[in-house]
Length: 254
Image 1 (tube, helix red, strand yellow):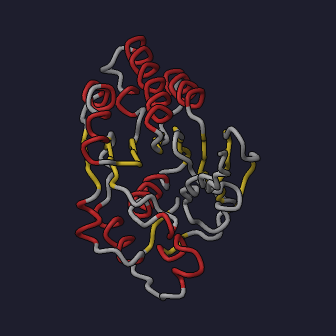
Image 2 (cartoon, rainbow, N blue to C red):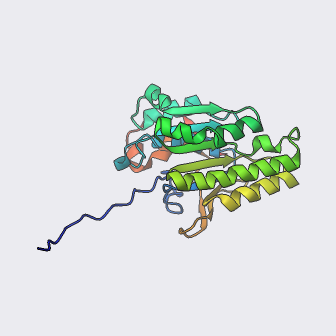
Image 3 (cartoon, rainbow, N blue to C red):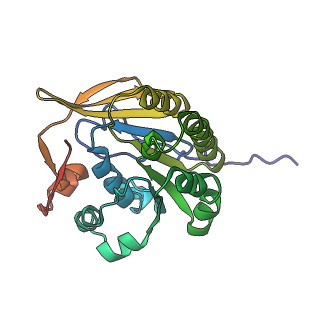
């Protein structure tokens, strides 16, 4: 006898958003398998703090319910921002920091080892769904690293990361900080842009502050104005978060 089987459709995991006014309409969020690049202004340092906290929220509240692996290539990890953002998201600051597993690199070769030799073991050990790589290109712009060697190794790294995110279905976010214009800097940027699935820029000039979605496989590309000169931490939490009135600090987006 044939029986009709009733199956429930598999629901896709909600997107992991920045939860920023003006930006979410442009870019609804990251998806598992994304290798994303944030670049432009030093403000991207503050955004990584936000993502480290939001990743620990339950999926029902827009998070990933996950630990975070943070590979710090430029000494940019900010304990204070993490603690304050945790309070605003009604998380215990100490416990939140304990769920961010930091590996610091001090040379291009250490960064290469952390990524290509240890990252797979690390995400499995800590069951992390989000990996942040801060200042991914900085060490490779150092003149102590020969240019040809820097380009060769860096190309291997960004190719590896793109495949790694897709293979393990994690969200991998790298920041590319502003550096003096040079041929090497341009080449490394081009390599990163080519391999990233998502590219977001955050720019500040004398006359405007904006975020631009420059690359994505499915979202419409475009630009959104940022709403103010100095966004309070509560501005990163949407309307519900702002109603709590917990204005404890400010994050500079410039």
